[in-house]
Image (cartoon, helix red, strand yellow):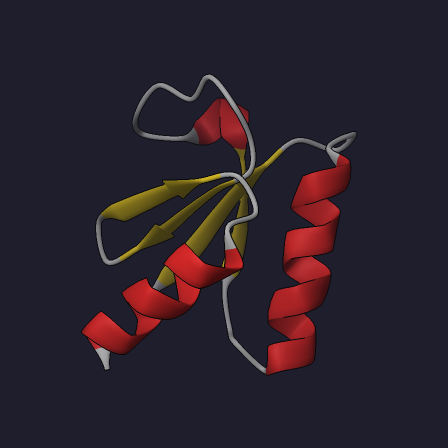
Length: 68
């Protein structure tokens, strides 16, 4: 499961979600305020417990390959 922790005004959060939508990758958006761990920067993409901070396409693709 992929969870993306965001804030409403974060441009990178929206760019990340647009990219995930374009790639056909399903995810759940959750407010950074509701994260079960401390967040100091957004977006945070959680892929099976691995947190990736920022819009890092290469790291996200790598994490998705490790899960597949």
